[in-house]
Image (cartoon, rainbow, N blue to C red; front, side, top):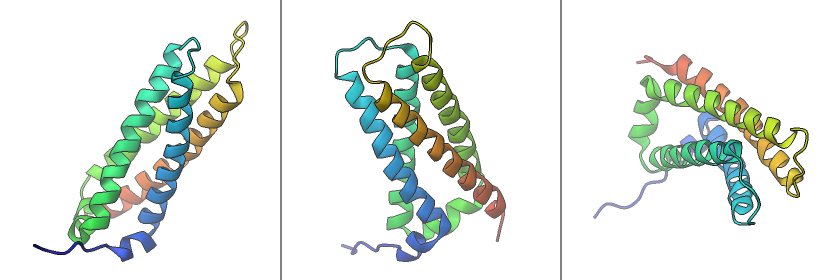
Length: 147
């Protein structure tokens, strides 16, 4: 049986640093929105969309990160394909939409939220993550097709 090889060089690259920060921010906002679903408050469609979008890209980013970390060949091959660019482009668009939808929902007139600060923090963390996904999309576009 082969031993597990950790790709330390990937952790030192911009791509690796962005993925680590994306996962930390993702843990924060998925934890916040997940906790808010367990409180028994009224749940609005914007919150459901935020949960679905953020969980989807959190899991996808985690799988990419583990794949790059455990396989040096994956870390050198996948960024040269269009997958990185498409994944991060779609993620940035959908996370931006989820963040804006949540911010609009919590700032609507006539809605009193006891969890306003938590939802605002989750939305801001998601906006920061959107910026990181845009940076990764730019890097993915730059490395696409490199031989």
